[in-house]
Length: 411
Image 1 (tube, helix red, strand yellow):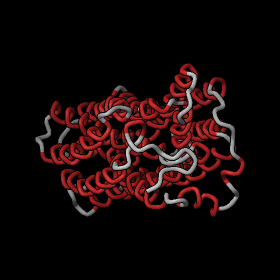
Image 2 (tube, rainbow, N blue to C red; image 1 turned 90 degrees about the vertical axis):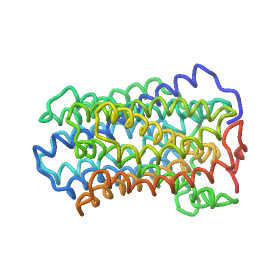
Image 3 (cartoon, rainbow, N blue to C red; image 1 turned 180 degrees about the vertical axis):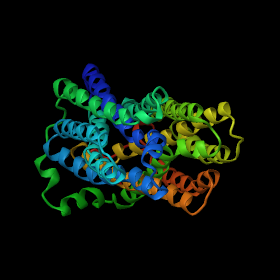
């Protein structure tokens, strides 16, 4: 990770990874932004809707484990292209599902294809980067995810509720186009490592927990799980929670777009700060701001301008935290097993993405108000912040403790 890389190749790789993350963000957000039209047409119960939201997360969990591991063995590029093609085709299939059971099944299958994308996007960006710009490159690639979510919100803003299936059609065509671009222009990157997958779980466990990495790996998984739980709960339920607080369709869609726009700006900003002497200050700021904003958005009067500003701040705080944990994950494992390490951490996060929507649905089913649901997330973000704070003691990049290049970070 410390050797010099060609700037042109690095920029091309990060740019293409950004487009892949853009597609993932659009697809992940698609379920949440179509919930209003879907509910009007199919009349799902809160439990049905929670299962629909969570189905993609379940697929994402399995896909992340398999995708990261296969990428270390067969190459990141080929696994990423296959992942994009798979979830593109299955997103198109989702748009034709006639009822909630088939819609939920299609979302699960889409998640399987989608799950292999993000670990490889981050690993490719890290592989291509110079050490002093590592976190900036990771953030530049990852920022496509919140921006893709904003684009999904804007699509919904400009179409009638009854045309919600259009969102899944756009989310299906775009990754097929990006897959073609990646196949043609993405550099091959590091050679595949046939021994990385090892053919058994013992080798994978050794890479994740051996040589003093156990405590950090477990802490990293907890941070991914809790931060992803918060992110996906908000991605899926924030439009309905804001509607439940009294906002109409237009302001709700704009607030969701602001959530993604704030997340985009914050992700880039934090990536730059993580490569500077402001690294720890930015991490502390992120940890403190998120619970404060959650309380404000739960208790403040539902005025459109105020909610738009708070949604922007909420997205900023949540996605800044995501960039931080991805940067820590990339710094924690040597390049030869980075796909495996990031894939396992992302899988833990995918479990959070599965639990988050179900948690919100369960709280609403037992009679909790939208404000109470938002307040209920505060202990989760406090626990997530504690995990990040503990991990941040070791630093990342040139302004923190350097990861070991062959065996990963040790505690």
